[in-house]
Image (cartoon, rainbow, N blue to C red):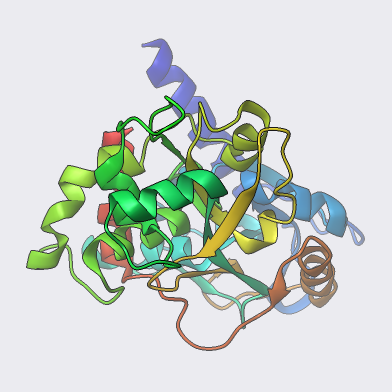
Length: 316
């Protein structure tokens, strides 16, 4: 009962933030500017530092999965209350796909082009990397990759520690993209369906890939050393500091390549305040993100992302 009450309170908090926005400058009780321009941002919690640096009006800070669940179940015609959602494009695709599966209107979409981009990387201790290349019988110089790590999870390394993979929660803005990268490495490509034969190994390897307590796994890796975390996934923008007293960490590009695009999600027919858009873009670039990249991000379809989210959540 207590868990249900806490969940209900969290959902109501998001709905309230989306439905009751107070105007910043002109006293408009809808929280919107002229001609449906949205005021206020619902920030995915692992992008909260970006919202803070940008100085935008923050309507709420929530795990991306929590906000997504509210949007997936929103009533037809719900205007979502005059706020935009700062998140990765993978979550926008997931929400649209889940509403399509339920045969209801899309209700929301991405406003314009992405604000910034950053590729997914695999951060690993350099000496453990060398050992895993040998263990997985890979060509010299090649990165071990997620499949190799998952196959070796729990195995004892030369220093006596065991292979342990950590990562952000799949319900975070970046965590879903990291999970998509891990799944793509297991399958061998990004354009696959959940029922493809190549995806059969996902169920077997997901517990190893989805393990760990979530949160800032790279910071934990640097602080606690290779005895606790052998490797983790993040985006290159968050891998600027790889120094540690325990040794050298290297960041390897994901293969196949998967990219996180940060976007603003809005109700259909609405737009975003351009000052907010510029401020968020500047804050992302200042934090190490790249200018928005064109072309596909490398993530699978929204329906497959939903399946990955469920599988990774069940495997933790």
